[in-house]
Amino acid sequence: MRRGIYIMGKFMTPSEIHFVSWERPSITKLAILTIARNTNSANYRLVVLDNGSSDAQQQMLIDLQNDGYIDELILWDQNHGLEVAREYLLRNCTSEFFICADNDCLPEPLDGTDWVSKLVDLMQKYEDYGAISCRTQVMIGTGNIFEDESLDITDFPHPGGSLRIMRTSVTESVGGWEGKPGRGAEERWICSQLRENGYKTGFATHIKTLHLFGLKDSDRWGYDKDWAPEVTGHSDISHPALENGDNIEDVKKYSGEELANAYLHYKI
Image (cartoon, rainbow, N blue to C red; front, side, top):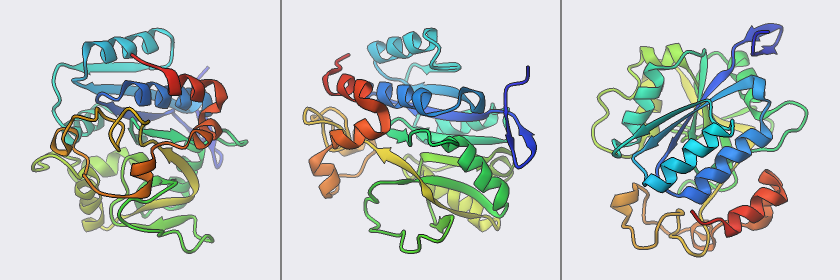
């Protein structure tokens, strides 16, 4: 039997989820387990590329693959940056659509149709869009852009890797991430490439994701408290969500009580 889904009467092969990880083991594990919990297994292949994490985290990923949660696992021995990882996964992609997943975003729970099918449906319906990200619960640095709830997609110049679906052939045609100078802001690079070539980018107004910010024993992005922003690649900015960390009740809504409780106490 072929593995895949039917969207608007057309058979679709599973979309690849390109999940790039680097450190943050408890967040990474929760994200992977929540993808499995909230997604129809026929709709996706989870490809995890670890960008040079500790031996302990890489062993955790090997264990998750052995347990059937990861379809393909790529382990690098050093951090080459998010852009290089995205480019590598793009050039080896075999599906019509792929989904860029950061290791700190949880997909919304199943509600009849899962989030992958909803994203694919949007890409089929709006062929002028090259990239559509799920809507995070808080927009750091931008304020609320979702003022018109009647829209399927809220246009935005550089939606990030919060479960961002993209067209493989189109992303390749605009050059992917090849030649991206320096590190950081991968979404600004690829989305500017798309928009310069006539494609739109934005957020799915009604498909949500929970962005994790870590617990009390981490920094504001879920990393070791002693790491500087230039090490993690995350901005050292001020925002209530960053200061308060994860809301455990929100985590329970997305991951279920069992995974949420394990996340609160899990130590690698």
